[in-house]
Image: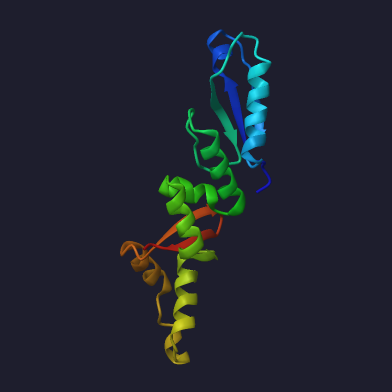
Length: 170
């Protein structure tokens, strides 16, 4: 991923008073560093005594949407997950909408990235079965892939042209 994973944290008191006051923060920094940047932003507020903030924007989450009142800790964990799995992390989080389920799928159920699910079905079949050469041309891997998906044995995330990430669905 070429894009930095960032969040825009806004001062709510300033926002409610008609001022745009906030800061873009690298969400993969240590949580203490993120909190320090938020505290510094609040301390420099154009409104006296401000304490509340919200996440008003984000970048680099690749399809996953943070909530406005998501905790900094949660935003940090999500950013780190996406940084760890840049090819599919955001799409996997959007699929599950749960960090622990996404982490389990990435660590235990990921099969790889293929041009299509049919390519995965072919690779799996050829690695686990001995197919006589004279029968190989009769195997319909697209039909096998369709059946794998319809039966919920696997699920896929398409993240680009001919970039199909395959996961076992357990």
